[in-house]
Length: 478
Image (cartoon, rainbow, N blue to C red; front, side):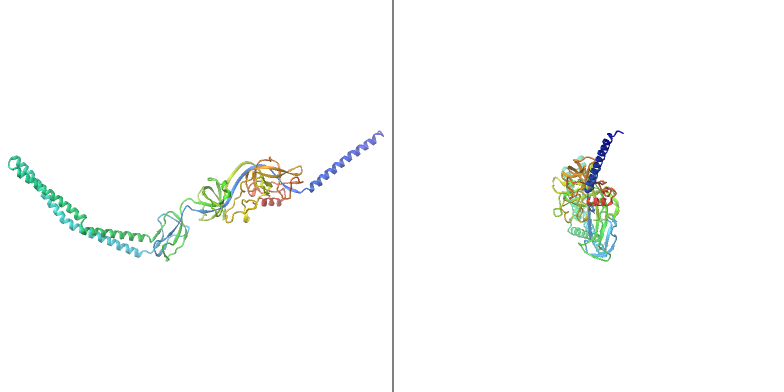
């Protein structure tokens, strides 16, 4: 090899080696720089279905509830129903002792029969004489009419004079007047006689006594006013009952409704006809469907709540009981395909100007909607699973080239654990979970977190680190 070329080759190798060493040093420095950066959960932005719901407590209510009691004082002879038993309209529920009232009814009926017989006797005795006089007057009228006909014939033949014919006509007129008088007397004796009138009054009085006795006797049988179910029985055999005290409580048959008191903050999200899923704690595996039936026109000023009623879409489950407490989940909005982001990634709300670190937890450990620093109203029976109307914009931090870069986004539909992104992000962007210590521009080491909106199935899981998933679940308040 050329002696002059050897130094040049040696120098070239030294240059290459130096460059490689410099690159290794730079890479090592970058690695050290990266290792010194904090690890932060990285949440990918992606398209997914998004459903917003409200959850709150409701109670079972029938259309009508009535109390059954006695209108008279008496002793209970028999109670013929038990709590929970179905009854038909007119069924006897409670029977009171009725011996005295039955005897009183029999006495009233006997008095009515006696008055009826007296009236019939008076009418019969007065009518016989009047009817005889009427018959005699009618016979005399017929005789006078026959004489008149005979006289008319004799006048034509020349045997009777005109005067005799006039006399026969006057005899007919007199007989007609007597017949009319006799007929009137028969009618007078039947309806207007003093004794008869008194007897009629006595009969009406006796009949009224019968009606009153029957009404008092009917009051000893407490009957169902309509088809119903017995909710409460507060009477036993042998008990003395008095008017004004409820002995039985009935739920009248009809469609079962659910009634809920909902925080007025969520009024704008509720509409008549929205679907709902209902479940009882004791029967968690037996959900049934309902819909929003009505929304009260006025708000309860003391509780800050509005009454919402639900109608069942199918036959009520057999386990439902009056005033039972149920959990109702109403679907208030749905997106079949939305660009979604976890609530835990939001840092600030542009409209409110308040810092939001993930989702808030509802009071008393319940999952529900809250406003930062504002607890749910006291005495509210149920809490929702969504936040109030979202701000128009929010800020997130996006992982770009190893640093947390701020990005302002526009929000759409918002649920407890996720939000719809209308602008500011695209599918595949990596958004960092919000952290008070993480500032814009800070170095970060993204730690991928797998998440899905909605329920336990949507709980986040960070790689193989199970504790990160639990932390995300708690942060979302689920």
